[in-house]
Length: 191
Image 1 (cartoon, rainbow, N blue to C red):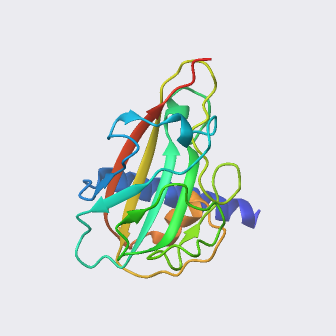
Image 2: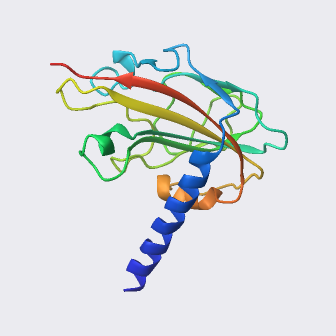
């Protein structure tokens, strides 16, 4: 019973703060060399292709930014009635504020090591319950899906442990978000 209450409180908190962030104006510019905002995610970055994470870069971080968080999800699955919540494709956190982006084809290991400027970065748990990036893989029904790469600027270095999923991460950063930015890409499978 206590687990259900904890889960219910967590979901209520997630819904409240997701709504607050949805109302926050995006001030951070997020981009990629793989596609333009509202462009098509390349096959190589899909789970039908090589499943390589895209490169990301960002600018215009708010003053006082100490750490960054990235969440990639597909909210279109809710609109299409496929799922009750957006499918989570990537959760990354403990990203140093000094980083100006992420390289393409980043490791899928939970601990990101050996990448200059990303010391301490963690790949959290995606919708498959695995760490790292999982590219677009919608059903082959010709429906156009939208993939949101949302960056959060935090006011503190939270040093969060490995293994967090989207809901746990959003709860952990609650009250620490200074600003957000988003890159959106589309992908559809026709065959």
